[in-house]
Image (cartoon, rainbow, N blue to C red; front, side, top):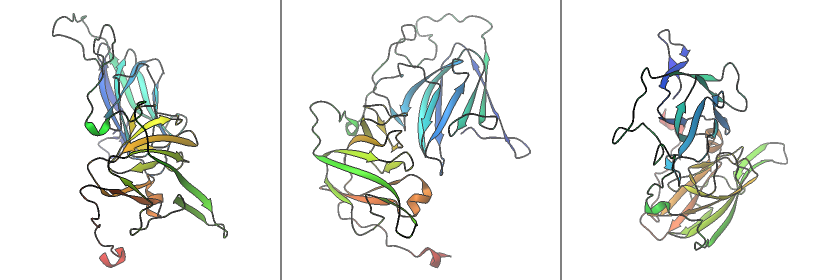
Amino acid sequence: MFKNTSSDGKEALLDLKLTTDQYYYFRVSFVVISDPVNFLEFYPADACDVRVVAYDGVYRSKIPHERHTHKHMLTTSSRVDLAVQCQRNADVHFHQGSKGPDSRLVSIRTIIPANKVIYDGDNVPASPFWDAQLKTQWIPRRPYYMENLCSPSSIANDIWNVSMDDTVDANGKKQISMNHHQWDPRIPIRSIEMNQLAEWTLWNTKGHPFHIHINRMQIVKGCGYRYEAGEYYDSIAAKTAACTVRLKFFDFAGRVVAHCHKLKHEDLGMMVWINAQGGPGEGVLGYPEEDCLTLF
């Protein structure tokens, strides 16, 4: 998103000009195949008011975030939507721990309106708040498949520990797997009924981001970084050793794939499938395996 190519083909700094009296909607997507922990950082920290609107394409339960946050963690192939208002010039950095001269990708230059705009009636400034003057939050509507799974009345009946294994065998060779399983197109690692409420504790995801197809995960507790309790996410790379999530399997039965979101690890077999039972798609087989060497 932040790559800007100059006429000679070299990467150039992306320049943004923002007026000081407006909020702007930033949609930031990361497609990083190697580093599971990355940071988007606005600097100086107090130059802009930066508030989260959505994680991984899902609105927060309340919009915008009640606090300004200048530094945002994102994992491989994840997204954050931000409401941004800058009162003075700033830079946006992308890095894996600390910013430096090469991490600056965006330059924000603020423009002070020549004449103060009077807002009244239907003429209101762009704002993420329900009431821009009172700075009140609002609650978005969510589809039926993103209900609040963490409510006191919701009882999970599928409890599972998922370990993103990173071990060394007796010969000193590195082994990566999920619960000591690698990809097997014939055998699921687990079976679950449609609409069954699952509570899974994910282990060791900081180096191996956990991603599951179709179903987003709602955070229960203990994850750190960007992962707020009660919010939905597409991939988990927790700061803590263990991160507890809840999810339900709606609409689509059959094979649901889960894997490490690092491309190399996924290709090396750090991938499994769960058999969702009791709905359309159950028992449907995938396309037959191909020997890739025969295709070239």
